[in-house]
Length: 341
Image 1 (cartoon, rainbow, N blue to C red):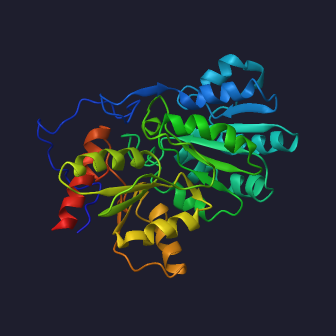
Image 2 (cartoon, rainbow, N blue to C red):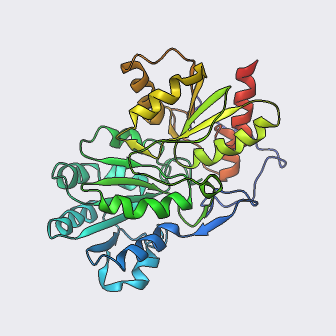
Image 3 (cartoon, rainbow, N blue to C red):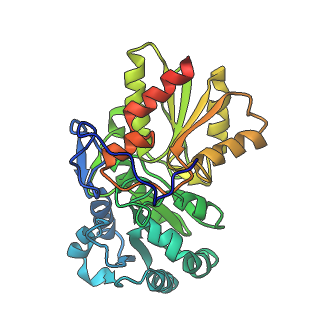
């Protein structure tokens, strides 16, 4: 039976408690190198080369790293206050005047509160607005009001809107100039604050619209996006010590999907396919990949998902929540071991 939010919660033993803040600045472990504010710094660098770039936010510049841009280019920064619908409409107007607005807010506010304005003012008109949103999925412990667990599901059905889910700071830095060049609206999930630096270890280069194999393996194939690529890469290293060989196919562009690469890698070697995503099990990368394989007649392999449940999530410290909902490296390794039995 599903627990109601009004039901008593299981007491958490002191050994299980984490002291980390619910609004933790980084989802990296202590031993993972980080880069501070990669989005804000990449946008500032781009703005030095393009005078059409403007930054706009709904009272969240500090919490979306746009304050870096605002400090460097105050005349090109627009603080719209707590009015996300106005923010999106104003961005549409700026785009019509030839600017390329980078709009920031939290993912919950863009997807739930401003959906209709993004749809009709931006996407239908194919305007050049880049919507960059912090706190995607389970990257905050502040509970359902801030956890955008269904943002990709909401936006996947919107025509003309590209969806990008970067894995780390390196990819954010590389994605910013590429989404700026793309003609049309983009929704990019943002890891902000001190963001893990992971992909440079593998010589990875971001290409808009492309999925890429980061490591290869014989026993399982992870298909992942966002921070879950970092987690499955960590899990792959741990599982290799036990003789389990896993490949990792990173899919940073969730819409449109790189169907050619996904079908090729998911059918090669006959490996079980495991889609790992920081999103609800409903409507995200997992269902997009499953549908692609079905349509292409390539769904012969075992298919599983590592994703958030179809429910409103608890509040708390992120390490505890990631263990609880199966997104931590430890939890991923546990899932693989259980599937090997």
